[in-house]
Image (cartoon, rainbow, N blue to C red; front, side, top):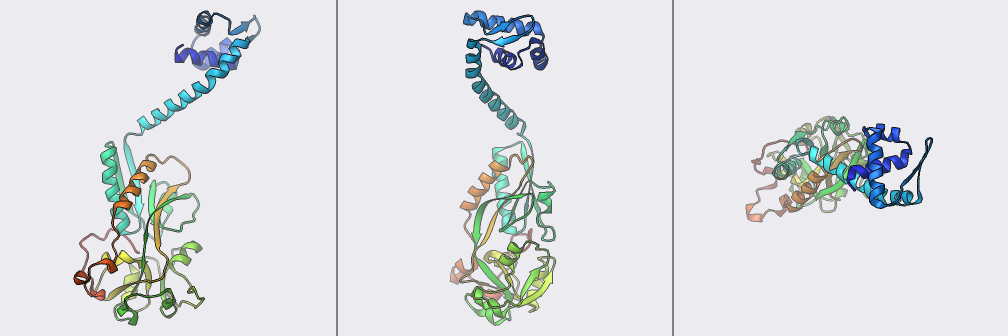
Amino acid sequence: MELRDIEIFLTLAEELHFGRTAERLHVTPSRVSHVIKKQERRIGAPLFERTSRTVRLTALGEELRDELLPAHQRIRRALERATAEGRATEGELCTGYTTPWCAELLLRTGDAFRAQHPGWSVRVREISFTDPYGALQRGEIQLQIAEFPVLEPGIVTGLVLFREPKALMLSAGHPLARASTVSVEDLAGVPLIRLDTIRSKAAADTHFPSRTPMGRLIPRGPSCSSWHEIPVLVAAGFGASIVAARSAHYHARPDIAFVPFSDAPTLDYGVLLPATGARPPAEPFVDLLRTQAAGAAPLHPQEAPAADRPPRASLPEPATHRCGTGG
């Protein structure tokens, strides 16, 4: 039995009317009648009882319907999936980042993704802290890598890609700048510079805590609206900032020191996706992101060989371009 003949039988079994079946399938009533008679001849028994007023299934017809319907539904779903994938063979995937190391991860993944999906291009754009999630919420991008936690309407948090140790960014003249490590409790004596664009309490508590784990008050430093203001304020001695440890390799300058924390929780970076709407092919891209992130060695100032490590307050200017925001 051909797939189209099965569809005609199942539609007639549902409608129990030759005219409505023909209209629904865009064929003639005579075509429906011909197909059903051919099926009945092949089976050797009637599938429908017909009168001038009614059409109803025979017991054999009901049995055949119950066995064919689930298989037909599976076939239709498989064809719909294949069609959707076939139509999604080209396009542009727009992604966003907030730090240069996330940008580099997206660029590496984009290269791998284009190799597997030649019809697709990947666009990578910087996301400003003045509007950290707006591009994703407005549908301007389909995927973003950002610092967790994120609790925003219209956004789904995906997997954590990597966990980054934290460091304290200080003026090179600050007494703690000469320490090998700092403790979270040391924050009680250091004003923290804040970004006033962070609206989420969970994110603010993570990046700009107001108290130490022992409950000591952390002084509040100046507020600013852009990451690029923070190093300027830090260098001038107005306060400090909690950053990812690898910030030292991207934002180094002679008047700033980066001192790793000995006891702070990690800074986690993960995938953000829109909660609704189409986002192909974000899922295969996320799989590649996971692979690329797992294969990239973390870059921390404390891991460099001692003979190759410059003084903490005068790390060399990195060769990579400054394509991101803060830490």
